[in-house]
Amino acid sequence: MCGIVGIIGGEKGTNVVPELIRGLERLEYRGYDSAGIAVIGNGIERIRSVGKVANLRGKITDAMVGDLGIGHTRWATHGKVTEDNAHPIMSKDVAIIHNGIIENFKSLRFILQTEGYVFESETDTEVILHLLQRELLKGSSPRQAMSNVFKMLDGTFAVVAMFLHFSDTLLAMRHKSSLIVGLGKESMYVGSDAGALSDSCEEVVYMEDGDIVEMHRTDGIVFFNTELEEIKRRRHGVTSALVNIEKGEYPHFMLKEIKDQPNAIRNTILHNGIDKTLLDGISNILILACGTSYHAGMVAKYWFEKYLKIPSIVEIASEFRYRSPVIQEHTLVFSISQSGETLDTLAAIEYVRSNSNCSTIAVANVKNSATARASDIVFYTQAGVEMGVASTKAFTAQLIILASISFCHNDFLMDKLKEIPTLCEDALDLAPEVEKIAHIISKSNNAIYLGRGMMYPIALEGALKLKEISYIHAEGFAAGEMKHGPIALIDDQVPVIFLCPSGELFEKTLSNIQEVLARGKNVIVITDSNGEMAFPPDVAKIVLPTIQAEFAPILYSIPLQLIAYYAAVQRGTDIDRPRNLAKSVTVE
Ligand code: M6R
Image (cartoon, rainbow, N blue to C red; front, side, top):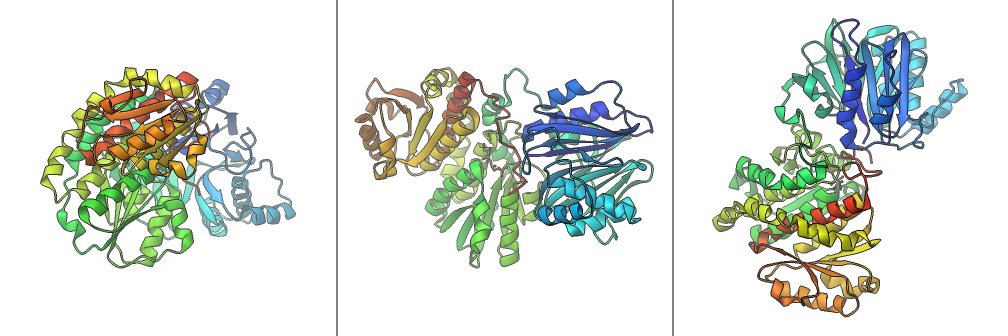
């Protein structure tokens, strides 16, 4: 979603324009549809553009120079994708960028318009600009203006502002939208995530809700609360993992990340010893997550109930808080989030914390991310930075953490877990075959994914991945539910992908395959070396190595990711930045 970068150059006269553009390029992975920068040079100068940062870069001339500036990638919420709605939003002497949503913007806009303020965009952000302007006119300092405006806003916001007449100062404020201050050798930075600042910063400070920061070129950085009382915030070293993330030999981050999985899984197993007492006295488990992470939670529910014998429920985090759920005592609450910044997941954790004394565990891929900081315990997936919008290696690494907890009392399975990276390597070797099979899918406008038991959430995940990257309409169903409705969709065109590992539910899934074959012809089966003989020779097959049944969800995810990837390549979509999607979903 929207990305923020702000820079104060170390010395007066240092041109920050190139670094602002680099910062925006590093934010591209979050997903956006327009971009812009503004600097203080000869007055405030601004350039904005619809589409990629490359378009913006193309519009910038050598004449645009400034030693302090802000940049933004916008993922449209209020107002269409137009240059007028792109940030920075500015007046003659104030420019701002904003992530989040101002929920009371309509009433504020009305008040400001009746006072004569003229709006040039359709954005909710513009009310913040005019409110700041109004405070300055009343005689407030920029710091006082930020604090006064903070109190007028409802919703979520990370805002960075610069003021023409205070040309050494950037001000920023945070309420439920991530904002990080970075300290370089000479320059100072503010960004929506550490990735935006990484190669320039030695230390970062994670702002908290209610924080305002004033960054001054020579006087340094001071944090305040909304009462303008000074507060202390801890500085963290920047991890080298964030630096220089390149595609290397791969055409897309997504393919690189799919292929990274054996290592991501190995590292996640190595780094996460589970303390068995974690589960002492626990009578229920509640899992909160969105999207792909929710699918990881669905698999975990099977594992937790079968192996830990603890009743477990998994909830879509974006729905959870709105049904006023009752949280029983002795419930252990998991949140799962790759980014650790998903607003709905964070809000669900906050609901748990305000309505119970239950312990919260975050499974996250990003160090010190919001869900990690909001929870009692954190398990970090060691997937490394995931740049592709489609979550792949973070998903299988989440499954590894959840498996390690589920099987912590079972030495046999814990041992078997260590075999997964090698089996994943074998699965990745099938990429050329999967690429051929993807042709069946890329020619179609629809696809159906079916699986039983633990393969049901993986069918949902396979369908989500295909939708996200190739824009082909895909649905996942529990295979046993076919005859209760979805079977009406079967004709001799629609590709139907069955997840059918040998084991307990093999025969039952086989019957469902027969039911589909009787009505259509485009069946693709993903099975293993023990199961493959059961299928007629004319059925398209992907044959994976045989794996311990409990771990099949991890291994079977790999061909589904590859199917989505190759189908998208064949359709020519923008794989790492699919339309309308964002990597960190920081609004509701
Ligand atoms: O960062 P999170 O894991 O909390 O993100 C949740 C979803 O937005 C995310 O999984 C989304 O579905 C991805 N685009 C999946 O590929």
